[in-house]
Image 1 (cartoon, rainbow, N blue to C red):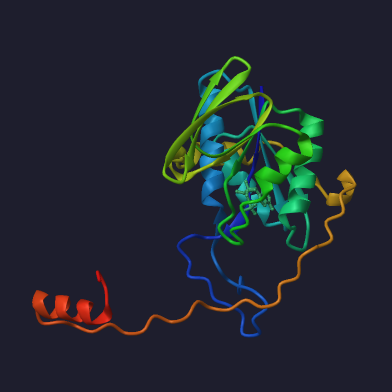
Image 2: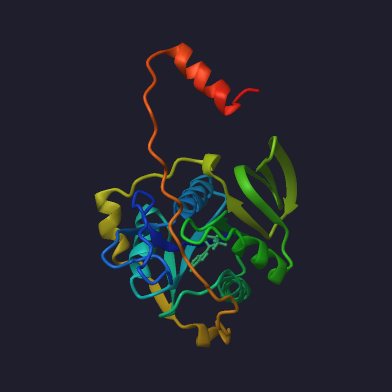
Amino acid sequence: MKILVPVKRVIDYNVKPRVKMDGTGVDLANVKMSMNPFDEIAVEEAIRLKEKGIATEIIAVSIGEQKAQETLRTALAMGADRAILIVSPTEVEPLGVAKLLAKIVEEEAPGLVILGKQAIDDDSNQTGQMLAALTGRPQGTFASKLEVEGDTIKVTREVDGGLETISLSMPAIITTDLRLNEPRYASLPNIMKAKSKPMAQKTPDDYGVDITPRLKTLKVSEPPKRVAGIKVADVDELVAKLKAMGVGA
Ligand code: AMP
């Protein structure tokens, strides 16, 4: 069974994003970029399924600018077998990404597609669900545990108020939640080996997919600044102040 893992190059989670002066977006000039953390979890899970003998090949795919190659090399260094880069000079919206992924699903016929639950740059949380709709495949979103049993996969999902376990028939679409696993670091020998793993380069046109944006960003702004706090002398003063603010009333 093949596993397809879409990985997005996003602003590193440790970086505090700066909004551009003109409010048109986030300033990405000279900012550290990394693989979307939920996608690292997806790559890790695919590798574990391969290590268990359930998967035979892991294909990483990224849609973005040329530099997304680096993100794919990271996936290859972690343990993916080959990569597909779909180059687009402009940001592709979740629907465009899902349409491109649907074409790759058609071509590669993977038993599982494991995506992140959301990309931490735009927090859309849409691509996996759209891909499931476009391909007519069952979806297990926000997965915190996966167990493959023959042609079915048991997915433990993180839902409000607890965990939900569902059983899907494969081929299926999965999106990862934070507690699914802890991704490994790529070792130096594996980073070297990744340089010679195959990476195909394509364009949206190769798949006949129209990626024209359907959404327009009107304005991006910083969250309001936190107002300064005050120091209290003791617990009594703290409780008095909280009461005055109506906290706990
Ligand atoms: P989103 O719907 O944008 O929050 O993204 C959810 C997941 O879809 C991500 O965690 C990735 O697995 C995948 N994805 C979204 N955009 C891209 C992209 N440009 N290239 C590769 N995978 C992507």
